[in-house]
Image (cartoon, rainbow over all chains, first blue to last red; front, side, top):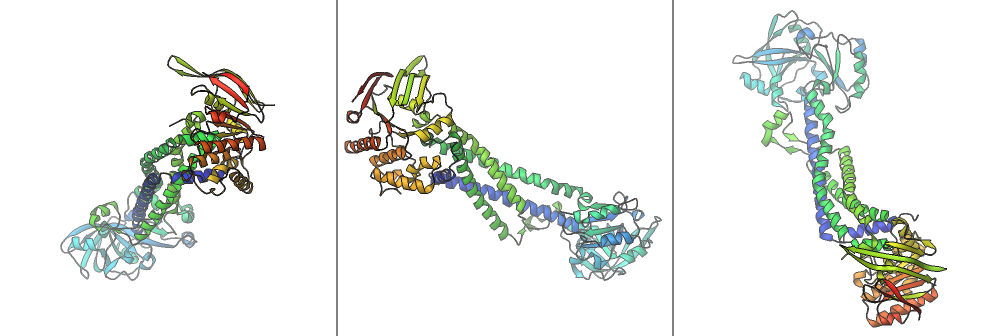
Amino acid sequence: MTPMPGAVLFRLAWRNLWRNYRRTIIMLAAITLGVWAMLFMTAVMRGMVDDMVQTAVRSLPGHVQIHHPEYRDDPSIANSMPPPDQMLLDALAQAGVVAWAGRVRVPAVITSERDTRGTTLVGIDPEAETGLSFVSDDIVEGRFLGSPDDKGLVVGRKMIDDLETRLGRRVVVMSQDPDNEIVDRGFRIVGVYEANLENLEEAFVFTGRRYAQSMLNMDESISEIAVLGKSYRDVSDLSHLKQLEGSAREVLPWYELDAYLGTMLSTMDGFVLVWIIVVFLTLSFGLVNTLVMAVFERIREIGLMQALGMRPSMILIQVLLETFLLLAVGLAAGNLLAVVSVAALSDGIDLSIVSEAMQWMGVADVLYPALEIRDLVTTNVVVIVLGLLAGLSPAWRASRYQPVEALTKV
Amino acid sequence: MSSVRCVALCRFFFQGDQTIKALDHVDLEIDEREFVCLSGPSGSGKTTLLNAIGGLDKPTSGEVWVAGKRIDTLGKSELANMRLHQIGFVFQAYNLIPVLTARENIEFVMQVQGVDPEQRRRRSMSILGEVGMDDMEDRRPAQLSGGQQQRVAVARAIVSKPAMVLADEPTANLDSVTAEHLMDLFVRLNETHDTTFVISTHDQRVMSYARRLIGMVDGRIVTDEAH
């Protein structure tokens, strides 16, 4: 059997592509725009989910959280846990742990001279929280806490507005101690923070950890330990912490703490694939039409090539090669356009005009599209594979003509 | 040894209740190096016979043997392979591949055969010289006249030295001078390359070149004589 003459098939495919210049350009423009739409919208969606997860992770949970097994059901002081023992401290000192912080975190009521609000009192080690949670970076007025013994209170902008109070004024924070007795203490507001999401500004007020522990009569006990790893996408570096799980503590990654976000991230790849396929299906009608016309216009020529000794399989491959080249050129242009447009938006897309909706979704006002290599690979593979499948029908028809019928077609 | 042998060859076309007998029990034997003309009026079956011999069409019944091998039972790929290595075609309407240059058209069959580029180029340039087209190798078919295109088609048909060339009304679209040159070329190639030529025509000038003239009417051979 004669081997496949690759060079001549490639030459024929490439030149045939440009026979009907206008039709090819229109089809290429459609593929380019389609591929751009696939990649750009995927980058926007990835950016949005990325932002949601980053915001969620920075709003206290960390990448992995250690707490009392009952704490999630009842986040009260009753479900606190002892301070880290040596074994836990050794585990937290291992590679993979970028930062960690122990916190007191209890439901509380905050009262100003004008109003009262429900909130969560968080007692923190200010130094340990730097880089781990949002609060140290988001102080816009006053100061951040100086030590675990700091008696000041850091409050969100929204809470300050709700309570109709201001920096330097005193407020009362009230909660329950381990004996379910009401405990309260007066705090001076020493700092105001503005978070990415406005609802966080009402959700948390911060004071020094030891000061909170003394107020709540809980000795050295803490509510949780938040641990930061290298990336929220892969918390396998922190898997050794899971081995420390027991009757006194539970170890959970962020995606189990926030099942909604975790599910969203895990289904994102499937959603991207569906999106790519849907866009491609709209393109495929044009693609198939172009290929059918290209074959239909060349029936005599196909008959001639068969008469000259080209096997049906060679005809099939030649038409598929033509399809591949059309897709490859369109993909190259679409990829380039997507990379350029995402790079041009590296400073983010300002969505402050729909700020409320974005807040509701847990996304900041500025969206940063994130074009990932795996999305580029998926898009290119899907377009090539589905494109060749779409080209299979006209290619098959071209290869099945009887030479004598094809040669006499007008 | 016979180059072509047809035994009780029939090719019928069916249109409703009507049966058109394009070939009606044709028996024919053509020896190697023969220069044969099939003559007859339009619809006499000349082209159908050439198509059957070239494996372009399947007969309704009967046998077709080419170079000692029965071809009417072969599959599409085997027939393509047989045509690739044993038969050169020249059609009435030039039939060049429009996106390839004259030289690339000539090299096309050799490329499909897997001949190496150096040899391809040498043989295509030589054959272009032989058909008087050596200065037009880079022209595409649209840039060539009808006669020039037909010469390229002839060059393509013979460049890989097939055992047989089947030419279907090769001069039909050519002026008399060009037609004469083409027939001179066929005769020369038949003599120098030992190639069997089977030409269908109803042009008296072409018939005058034949050494064997087969007359056909209504799908049957009615005359077969040395010329």
